[in-house]
Amino acid sequence: MSSIATPLMPIAGHADPVVQPRDVAPRADGRIDLIGMTRGEIQAALTAKGLDTKAAKLRAKQLWHWIYHRGVSDFAVMSDIAKVMRPWLAEHFIIARPHIVTAQQSSDGTRKWLLSTDDGHEYEMVFIPDAARGTLCISSQVGCTLNCRFCHTGTMRLVRNLTAGEIVGQVMLARDALGEWPKGNMATSAEDDDAADDDVGHYSADGRLLTNIVLMGMGEPLYNFDNVKNAMQIVMDGDGLALSKRRITLSTSGVVPMMARAGAEIGVNLAVSLHAVTKEIRDEIVPINRKYDLTSLLEACAAYPGANNARRITFEYVMLKDKNDSDDDARELVRLLRQYRLPAKVNLIPFNPWPGAPYACSDDARIRRFSDIVFEGGISAPVRTPRGRDIMAACGQLKSAAKKLSRAELDRLAEEKQAML
Ligand code: SAH
Ligand code: SF4
Image 1: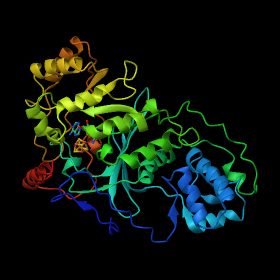
Image 2 (image 1 turned 60 degrees about the vertical axis):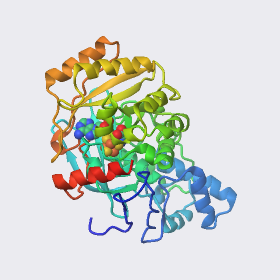
Image 3 (image 1 turned 90 degrees about the horizontal axis):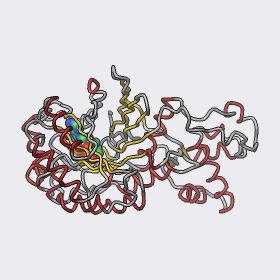
Image 4 (image 1 turned 90 degrees about the vertical axis):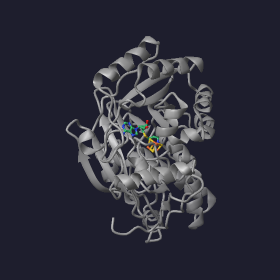
């Protein structure tokens, strides 16, 4: 992007890795973007522009439906809003989408979009179709303040939290791209002043391509809790995007103090980036372990609200050659998951390489052996097939167009970030 209006937070030198989000710069045209606001916030924004409470409440409800249930971004087609009010709305407000910088498609059908915020920061989202479902992998931050040693996103130097609108905007953009908003009488409705919207209810989940959402793109979602929560509430709202919480998974590297709140207030499925079973190795590859150790992490998992045998916690385990992939590691993994009585499944993720990465992927035979040991311990441990590697869309490969760092710079950055923990 040519110009960046909001300064990002430089990571080096900050004492605490918890992101201090910058306020997003107001839009240059002075209009307010409604995407990401709660119903109450939309109502308050309408009141602030002069509507009385009753009118604002009604219009907020109608806007919500058009924006989130119908995917409309043009006030002119909102047929149940008085014709004279539509230009007034357009003058003060906007229903924006993230800007698409590039869109790529992998030979395996995986799609990756490089997106830009209105103030010029880049982040990525990935759509992974397979026979049974279509999963959208969304980002929660520009970059990541953490620095897991095997993750490309962790090498990004600059971070800003994405707003709720920028998070939910990814889902809306994906529905635009996949053509998955309900078809209705929108084409003709503009003529039909104040007409009732008789098309409500035509929307069904059947046959949709986008069925699941994972918060596994760029960033640590539990370091951007409020925005992630507001965005997911819109995604789950019955008159919003209407996706079940059972089809949404939040992945954390282990922000232990926020896990109970995530379960209670967001309520989606939990995935935990475990990746190692000893303090020594986890401290090295997932440095947040120095702050919140394995014991406190596994205790928080055991207490996660809503986890049970029907809704198990996913433990992600990246397979790094000669680092965390021995038979002993596999046996220790089983022992730990049993010790804490966790309703668990393990996802074994072959390491996805990126330029300058300090690790290699374990051999296929090693990964199979590891998987067998965990299976024999009574825990499901499928090996995940990497998707979209050819377009750098696989787990941990996302980095957007940020400046490429040399090996020496990567090591220094890792040290700086680890010093903050
Ligand atoms: N920040 C969150 C969510 C994003 S990462 C978290 O760490 O959980 C999604 C998953 O991909 C995490 O389990 C992450 O550890 C894993 N991952 C990161 N880099 C990877 C790589 N190069 N190869 C394979 N998996 C990777
Ligand atoms: Fe951040 Fe997750 Fe990557 Fe770790 S694995 S650096 S927490 S995005």
